[in-house]
Length: 203
Image (cartoon, rainbow, N blue to C red; front, side, top):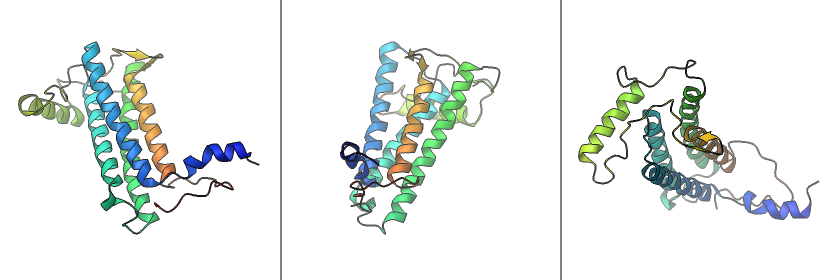
């Protein structure tokens, strides 16, 4: 049995609406983007093609999450639970893609011979996309011309925090966002408790 203290502690979490969850994820994604750019400038880090590609995924996640939090896209004006599950599934799949890229880069850093290294000489689809975008933005971007410019190696650990590289932290972030979205939009089953079943269908 859950204690009264646990019920009170979990009540705000169970009362979380999908619209608020989208807003939180959107703000968090943009906060990570700003933090990564400030860290890059402060420590003079050189982002790699996979770093820039993950940056693109964070931008897409942030834009869509904030868009879904707006009233025209909220569940108050749509058909209800099915619609916010679709929106949550779309964002969760985006997080899953980001998680895969971050794990791939983590393997490059921890086991270089296990996976194919990024290459500017023989670029793959991600490298070509990043190179094209980076050069275009460098020449035509209205702000932050080097924001999408990749000049580093994917296997390099230029900076770590608590023993984890930026690729590791990115994997943690994408996993956390995806799990949170799946839970908040009830893509994952969750156990309701007495006194905590106050989650409305998007209201």
